[in-house]
Length: 115
Length: 115
Image (tube, rainbow over all chains, first blue to last red; front, side, top):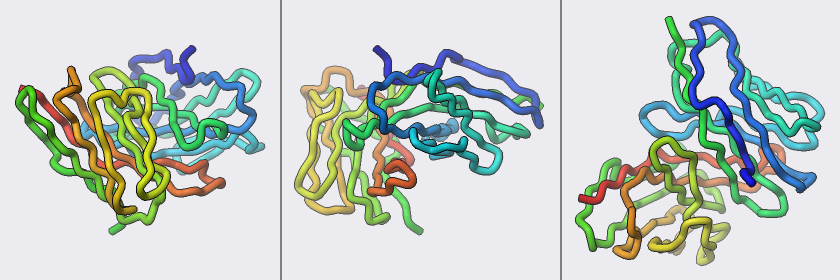
């Protein structure tokens, strides 16, 4: 089974609007971390936000927030007030405590911000 | 500035040749990783190293080799045994940080093309 599933290959959003990128995960480990990365066309993976499985509140980093629904095993990324520079690939990833430092990545969502 | 560097940015190789990709970090991170990314796909783990002089195979280690003689350096050799080496290669590093889930930080990547 896939550890990380991203079902939206491509998304479009109007500039200044908010957008939600979906991510579901599969694990039986009670201790895990969830991450979102941005990959612009240059190729570098840029860390955006982290959520621990025991964190009580949803993580936020500037315009990025992570909508963590533990029972549904979902970790959706919300980008508020979209900017043209947000156009990129976005990857969800998970690290399980019982597999050490290994990360599992989803297949990504391509986001295009429309002026 | 602290960060992760990879060189070269673009690399061309003839079939049957070994080639080595460089990865250096000055973040004082203990763990380092190599990933492969193919078009339209997520990242797949090749090798990782938690500490100097120690490394483990990831999901797709066949045809690759690594060394970790120094904390700062984790070179990846793509050998002639790798049947389909054309891909984008990303190096990452992390430090033990429970509060941030051992977040991995990435270099700019090397695009390898076999001619």
